[in-house]
Image (tube, rainbow, N blue to C red; front, side):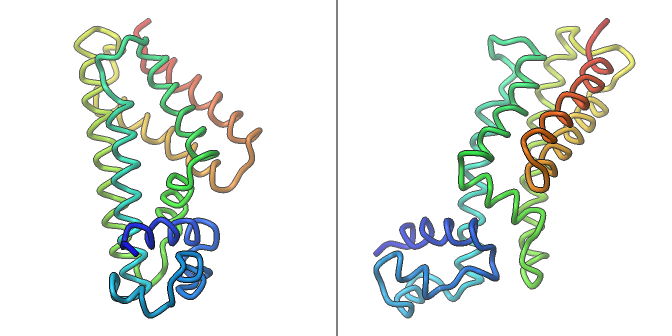
Length: 193
């Protein structure tokens, strides 16, 4: 048994049941091993959880890095709005995204500081990538003169945050209403006239 197989199974358990509801016994059973065998790879549940969280954060960041490339062929609006829609689709389909967002907003209390470091690193990295994207758009005259790159980046991250909250708390109708409303105001304020 590899540590990666244990992590893959643990991811499903953590995503479905949260940290508190996930059981090392259930994870071991699904892997096909006895619970003590998990300790050959991980110090305990906390160590396993953080390894899964780090692994998932890496994959989520790869998605963001791939999508937010300023030299794509689609328009600025299509790419920015498309990223929000793609994130919504990922949340609906990908266990990684569900787990990552859930744990970013609701980390285990005793691992909150360690979890938040990872979440904030991810958010900061995403903001850096978005900023590069807006810098490129600004250089090409696609951003309103009254809107700085920093403000455009901050506002876009706020739109993304609101969509994350709707993914976690709302349903598809509420999410799309929030997305359409925030996008309309955001895009109208950022784009050149």
